[in-house]
Image (cartoon, rainbow, N blue to C red; front, side, top):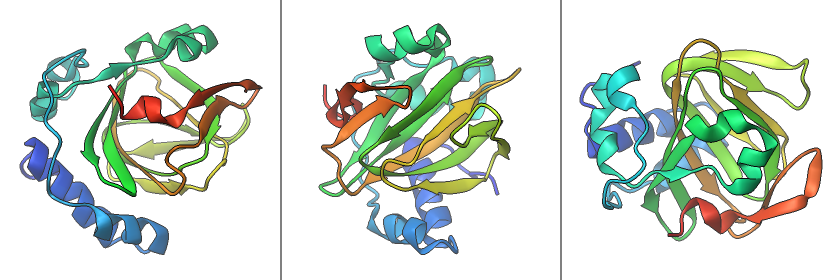
Length: 191
């Protein structure tokens, strides 16, 4: 399934519809809580969507955040990582994640539960160890429990992912091999 009209509001509506119809009740429950009201911010740090996913160029009109210092120390390839928050509700945060080609987002965990949906491109889903990798492609949706170990790795192409956090939104985020280097999860949606 592809998004027929990739403006920001249309893309959020597409994600909401996909999640609402999902057979995983945890995902459909979050889909039902998403609203159509998007948070608009001044454009900043946009990923090169016009080079890789031209049909989603409207997302460049949002404020995208870079990786944290801790993330860059963990894996320098995360310089290509950008993420934004478009829905900032009391119990759900939703946005988009971009990873350029040859980027490894190492295994990490966090207090919020999380949904990922590949909107464009493909990558490998890291399932807790170097040997556990699952190819995912446009349209694939999955759920991470709180504190579940996960990561992503791109190969020769970039990926654009819709994400949502729910549950313990103010908890911690950490890389699995350095759990003492925790980041407050609010970094994902505060200025």
